[in-house]
Amino acid sequence: MNERDRSSGQYGHPPWQPTTSGRLTKAGGPVVWFVIFLGLALWSFLAWIGYVSADGILNWIAGNADTVVENGKTIAGAAGVGKDAITVIEGLSLGDLAGSAIALLKIVLKPAIIVIWAIGALVVVAVSLILAKAGRFLVGLRR
Image (cartoon, rainbow, N blue to C red; front, side):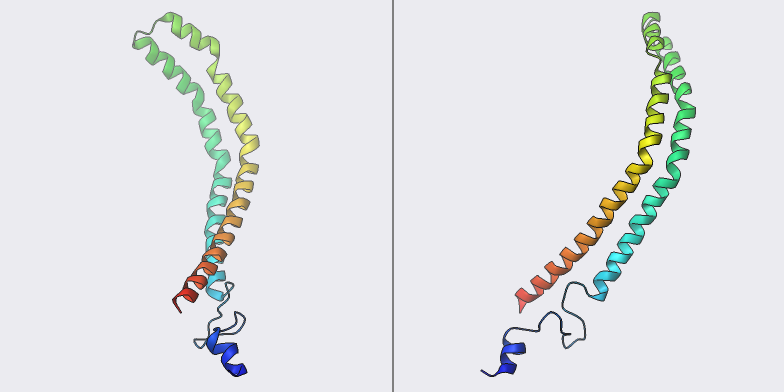
């Protein structure tokens, strides 16, 4: 067997050389990088929407927390739960508890969105490259 048969015919094309169709056979081809770029752009857009809207949503919840607690007391009184239960609810000061929880969320939410975005970006890149490698492997099995 001569050198030419061993280099291309018997073992297939090396991954750094283009095939006869002109596409690269390694996992970092232009199609894969386009998919990665598109996935990162979509993921970044979704994270940006969450980051920008986090303060507005938390402010809306904080503004309605007292109303929700008051309506809960009214409904409990109308349902016949009793004045003792309403007194316990007032003693818990749920409005203050909700305000504290929202203040904590305001501190934690934006950094958490950034961390989740970074983890998601790594997952998008890793999954795209792994699927490209798996596709190349499966195509190699068919030959």
